[in-house]
Image 1 (cartoon, rainbow, N blue to C red):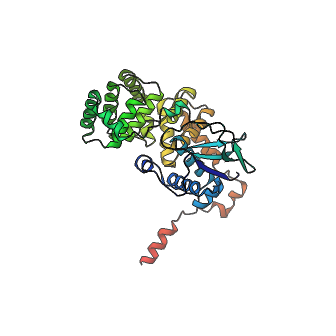
Image 2: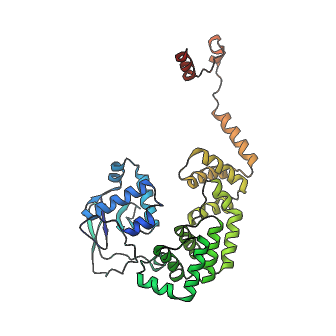
Image 3: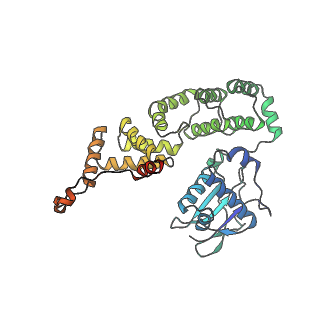
Length: 351
């Protein structure tokens, strides 16, 4: 891949990390995601170019690791990736935390092509649909006005009773975002808080993610939310739990489970069998790993758990070494013992 230039709308001649990043994004990110994002900020501030391979070499990651981190931050709406016709990454656009203003078409912004730098005629702004799920940086005056409303004051009081704590200004901003931007009614927010608290999830960041998930799925009433929660409780949460996840499923995770149940037609017990093998094999990217197992089983015609046993038996028979004529000689007929040489060495040293 060619070198990339990282740029943002508000360029400053220093490396600055937003307090909002520390307060709202840092805790949920893993080490690789944090390192790569901070490195992008550093490179952007110095107006230096880099590449996927350079980042991978610097932190001793694979290029796939770097791409996963970049796509994570893209999903968090802190950056956007730009591609060429061959789907190669050609640019990284760091986004502000607040909704971006539309950039005039006449204002060129530097980006990178496969051969070098080339100007863009304009920057494509974040769509209004994406903006809907970005929490604005509400001012103290806006928070004060929000709290002064009688219905809002009642809602904040109820929320504090559910969470058993006084809400911080940042947590009040989250409630304002859910009400103002996502358009949740007082009843729906009340149900949302109950729903999360009942699952022992009292972090407002978690509650915000649930609210965004509901908004993306068109939930507007407590009845719709209850129906969605009931469906997930029955068919999704068992699978989530089997993969070691106790959070609300993301749209990507739901799409995996829908594929397994609808497209592949697997019963829950077959999916849980794949989850068991996944957990034993890896602690990362478990949905992708389980999907690989289930895809192979689907191609092999698996319908029930008994089919899995038959498939395993056939696999082990195919892998077993075939006996040759040479195995009939006296030397090969000698029964060999399977010694644990590490244990033997320890015993000898202890005598």
